[in-house]
Image 1 (cartoon, helix red, strand yellow):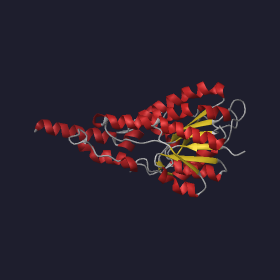
Image 2 (image 1 turned 90 degrees about the horizontal axis):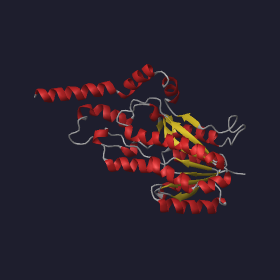
Image 3 (image 1 turned 90 degrees about the vertical axis):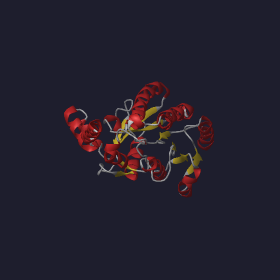
Length: 294
């Protein structure tokens, strides 16, 4: 019997869109969602079911759950919490409303979906797939607003996994690496006027645009890996053999990240090199020193 899958955040150019296409190719009953339904037209034309969904709005989530239950007969095999946003900005310059909006999507939106769809998932003994980031393993320069929301998501997912275990629902976390998608392109910002980090603007721009990341992996490649892992089922011996894993690393730089995270000195040198943290410190200090002399 075909598995039913609901995916949040399926705008074109992102991982969610690629996931919807890949699950559809695998013969699943796919429900693709987005805040703006007009962006889902190409998926609808391909025969994929679509629904409007704003994960920050409980009424929208409730309406989506009701429509999903009607489409699937009251069950849902896989819920993919993919909707997310980014906010690259020095912490001292960060707009607190923007940070709250970030958490509302990346963390609270996922929590809202898991809670609201739990009944459908329990009916199918299903799987929750939460999209996190390998950035939680790095001191990502100017990216801590984003990575802190994903670190909180990781902790939430670990707790949720144990609480749902007796209810027959599994939880998988995707530790996403560097992926060619629209999440950064859609969230570009300028430094605040008078920012202490203005002397390091080239470093800031480099971080926002990820020009340091030569190992970009396409969303289609990442989607194929996620789908393949998520449809394996429960496996044997409580999932220890042959089933869907609890954590999947996929995307650019994930192998390097896993190798060096247990080597603190190598980890430090690599991240300094990639994110130009030492350069940022030097540029800001030089500017402050020059200002004092003037």
